[in-house]
Picture 1: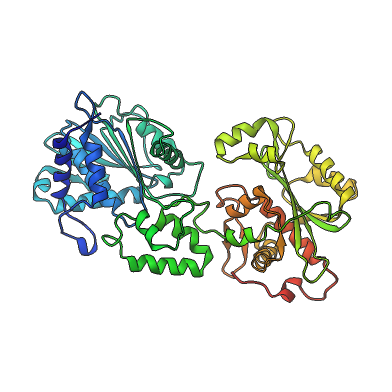
Picture 2 (picture 1 turned 30 degrees about the horizontal axis):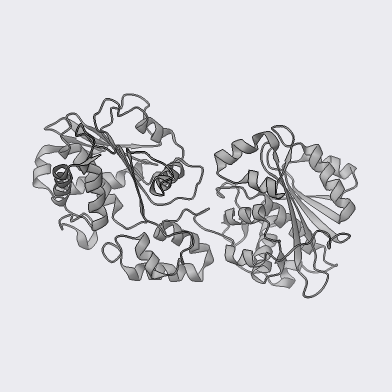
Length: 517
């Protein structure tokens, strides 16, 4: 590995001749900020013995408003016009055409402000293409929703907001083998943190983290991640500067303060602030359950002390290959008592290791610790779970079991045959909203005791809720990026528990005074 000062300087000089295209910076020369300057010099100046670039992939993860679109456009133009490659094919990729056009439109504006480039570049705006006529090179927009699988000979690739890719197909097509005919192809990946830990972006993010920590070596991969650390105080302005290298330059500190204040006052916005402003990978953009509050409810739950008490169950079977959840909720027996929660979870034994690798979730550790059970084979053994519930009923008095009416027909019939009272439970706003809001209210009041069960806590952290125009809410399995089955089972069980706390003429929920979120 060698450093070629001349090549590094050439790239920096080219970019410095471009002009900014946004706001108060419009028309001013593109003077690279220190963090941008380092990236450009490292990527374009680091070479192998043969003089060609060392790095063929640069992964830059940085919060929004730090100037990544302008940097990406400048790199795209340099690869097209200044890299000395004849017939260079440079592609701008994103999740959809609109997103892919953002960087392209910045590049068009930069060309429009440069007399030298304006003479030499022919824009074909209908095709989202810039053609550099002296070398027959071009910069072309592609998106995940429209691309072909053949014929790419990539010299440069600028991938904007990699975290938003709906799947890995476009990434694989553009990076696997497409640049083999080029001496020094460059895949420039630029993104903010995302929410989907099963995505191609998180896969690349993990690789970048491993290289930065010395756990992995890849001399062709250049990683840059600006983010706060797991244990950092997200309200500390010092860590804001750590995550935002352009703070006080392209970002006004007052705007970050305002966004923080809003997130502090509305817990639902916290994750959005962490993701977009501090570049943290979060479970979902809008976190419903404030986990600090949930963790305060990790009061001890002693199954032995609960023996003989009445309780209510919630059963979420999911699919035959996925997590099945059964949660028991025990009513308070005194004024200062709590709602005690006993959760149980099952996965098929044969798929456990595969799921650990695929989902990046410690199912195997949870099994060792006794928090997750497995059934034989590669699908859930419902008979095993039925027997388990029957055995539970010898210790606890299970008054009712609520279940999702769209599944579990056979198992429900079997449980009914065993003498259980089973209650179908709709998953729409009408049925889910009151107990979901009540769960939040009881959590905020510290009246839930869940013993810190790690699987249930993980699922609570995964919840994304939908809201209708009337303010009703329900957990959204589609938008919750990871499993929430245990949370749904808890909500159903809690509903039956509350509804059966004595005979009342009016709604229990009305009487309690619902928390409106």
